[in-house]
Length: 255
Image (cartoon, rainbow, N blue to C red; front, side, top):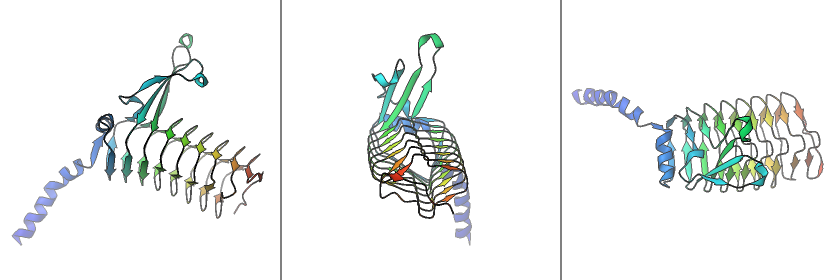
């Protein structure tokens, strides 16, 4: 009996320490990335803003497409894996800082991913900014939830990507996004505006059993032959004007 009570007492007093081990600051993660260490966390809460645009390898680039803006790029050079994690602050792989009107168009910062990234069953409680990000290897976001805008506008996915079972509570912005290989949004839930206008799918996209509660915008989107919308539900308005499937006019059947 005494042994059992002692074990229970030890478990109770150890609980705060165990919980503390499950919290890590964004600054600590950035420090690991700057040391070129792989990132693997399971069941952690990440506190603070994780700003990948401020890595030590940040450099200014010259790109005529940005007009007079200053552009800086950072590169995540090691694999990144987060499972069952919660991001309490902003996740920043893109930001734009305005200058005074007489000094130009501002300064833009981007972060790109050279290795595979995994965000499995994670929760992004604040902004998730991936605008213009270049994903050079596989990207998994399966089972994750975005409580505020998920901004992937102009992002490039050069390998396979998976957003199956993802919950987008606010704007899901994939306007002008490019997917070079297969991409899945199976059983994804779009709570508000789902913007796929001008999105480029090179190898097809799977929307089976996905649900669109708000506006679904696929205007001007060209879908390859093996794209699927089986059992997709559109509870809000949908715009497929000028959209094509395998070169033909396309609009999915409503349920």
